[in-house]
Image (cartoon, rainbow, N blue to C red; front, side, top):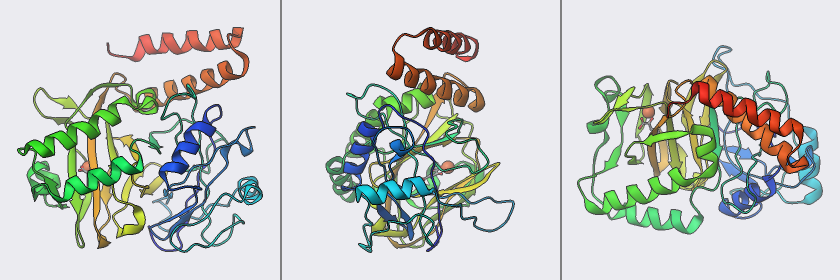
Length: 361
Ligand SMILES: O=C(O)CCC(=O)C(=O)O
Ligand SMILES: [Fe+2]
């Protein structure tokens, strides 16, 4: 992300936004609004337009490749207005409150999610796609705000510092090797395996990740460190990893470093719509289609610690997965509003039949 770049998110859900986003805001250090890598991300009240309260912070922006320049999307006034009314957003880093969307670097966030409000991890957010219908949730990229809480992140970082690392090229496929420059913790060390498995268990248990990714198997994640000058150039991940081979349908990155502690280091994901640089608060995770070309931008200050992993999904096709997710979100929203209505039962029937058609057991 470059200073002044703008990203925007749209609201996609209701139901448990309050829960998910409140947790998210806690994870982000309070009131949600933060400055991330030079891009200011407002705390947002997704329920503003949907009838509830929620807010979430993060740093993702969207940059269409085809146009060859960064596109700044028009801000959504209702979000800004509500944010201002509630006086909730603030920006870590510069301490400057922004109460007006549409100002020079005022990206909007979306928050959403449905599920059991008693459970952790029901909120998510993703970049706004200007050409999509409002509130469409058909997406191949999802950000989860509250995978690790701040104390667990701090503990992971402290543990990280004392563990042995080695050249990251050792775990890259032959083609990606030339593009990769980072350090990875050595899984031969028991402490590394313990940390890795603990983080993997948190990711695997996250309810929204399960709804979105429908994991059949998770691979062993890598713990990576990018110091100044480190980067991972454009690459595709191996389609099959390990033995027995894991089919890498989805990839995820769990951010462990706070975004204001380093410059650069965005995970930049390409899709048909363009490039999406992702730099999230510590404890937040992005999960994306593994078929996407992606890279990690050079770190120019500080240190970026992350845990990255891969998922074999029960639903191999990302479009089918995205449709199932959208349908599932819609029926949960309907159920939250109306209970067991006839329409809820119809949607549930379609959802379960599609799952039967598309899922591998
Ligand atoms: O660190 C990241 O966010 C992603 C790294 C990556 O693309 C990889 O390890 O294959
Ligand atoms: Fe990768």
